[in-house]
Image: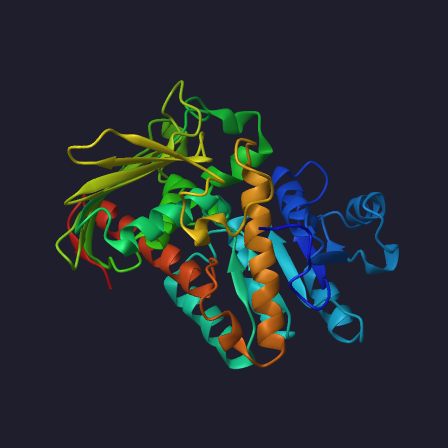
Length: 390
């Protein structure tokens, strides 16, 4: 149970690119990273406007001399200091992730990056190679995967409680962009512009979250081929999709579906992951993240609750407060950040094997997310055909 006891020797000296004033995701990253004292924010390049970025850094209590005009200036200055940053979070639009992450890794700085990690699989593999050569950690912000009941679902699958896995149903389909929200919202505008968002909108922005969760729950399932169709119901978003459906076949014979949408009018998040086996099923819903629905054929359905003694020990490891008290998104993100810190320290100590069993979305998850989106786009743009998953 997390009780405030530090699991690392010291806080990670930490910087941030993007995530400045008015950035919701920047606030989430800072809240999660600073929550347990595993990170210490000491530098930043928070804004395209250098003065606005410095002013924001001052609001956060940073030394103005360590609030930089851009990421290149920050990496050059900080890597030359004995007390320079050891890790940087990238909370900028998608088109900047690859060059910023590459520059950080080349400067010897660990990376925590918003998803998708890059535009292309080739770019993601390049980052993977650099990180591997330099012994650096790359974490990807699949924040929902830090919820504890996902770990319980993974343990139930591993124990065989569900039997042989047959079906995986994924969904992330909200309704907040059922009209052209981007006309009034700069935060929404770049997400539907290919120059900034890349080759997809909801596939990369939404669907990769439940995709990664499914990989946590069922790590043995490997996609063999998939078929994707995508639509732009708000026509001005074309060629980027605001709705997509993906069919997947796994090498085990299991099948999967993923529906992702920003035009599911009236819906909140509607992110759900359902895994169906030969004996039973589990379902997790991010609007009720402290619970996991377990259904065994021939038995009454059960609603498992976070923090209860009947859960697997691994699902209780990240409890921050006793059962009955709700935990939410910030707790989930904080769970990932303390794992990032453990991984960074182990790599810096030269013993990455120390965290070999530690679950967090690292560089492999980042590469896989980009590969999946790229394959989905290839299928959709070919007319919605089955394509091999390479």
